[in-house]
Structures are given as structure tokens and as C-alpha cells.
Length: 117
Image (cartoon, rainbow, N blue to C red):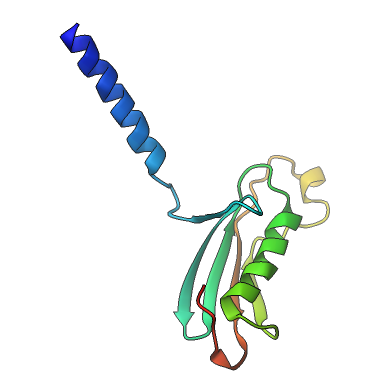
């Protein structure tokens, strides 16, 4: 009985620790149901990656990119340079098994000001 309790405890402990680990160390936005990562490249310049998660539609990723850019800069007038991850109109029809890369962009805030939220 004593060994069974230890085994159950170890299994429970391992399952909880595996749930706590995030594979990409990304952040979650529960309103948009997307995972993302951001880093400040230089003052007023950010690298933002919206992580492609299975069945999340491209429209949701792109909308989140725009809204998060506004939050980072704190005002309109920001510039977005998309580095990768644009989904073509026919991508799903032509290559249904293609794994789309993360939507990644450099955000440049106007006048190098940032809100840093």
C-alpha cells in the first residue's frame, strides 16, 4: 500500500510539472485565444510573433498583431514590417498539410515612444 501511494504521488507530481512548462515561453491572450511572444529590439522597436496554433484562423492572428501593436506603442501611427507568416488565399486548398510559420513582424512606434504594457 505504501509503494502504491508513492507511485500515485510521483505520477501526479510529474503530470503537474509537465503542465506548468510552456514549450515556447510565450504569453497567452485569452480574449483572442492566441499565443504570442514579444521582445524589445531597441527603444520603440518590438519583435512580435503570433504563434500558429493548429486551427486558429489567420484572420485572428492578423487582428491580434494589429491590436497588440497599438498596445505596445500606445498610439496610432506605428509601422509594421512583416517578416514571415502571411497566409496566401489558396494556401489551404493547394497545400492542406502545409504547416504555416508564426506570424512575425517588427513594430516601429512613432517618435520612438512606447507604452510598454
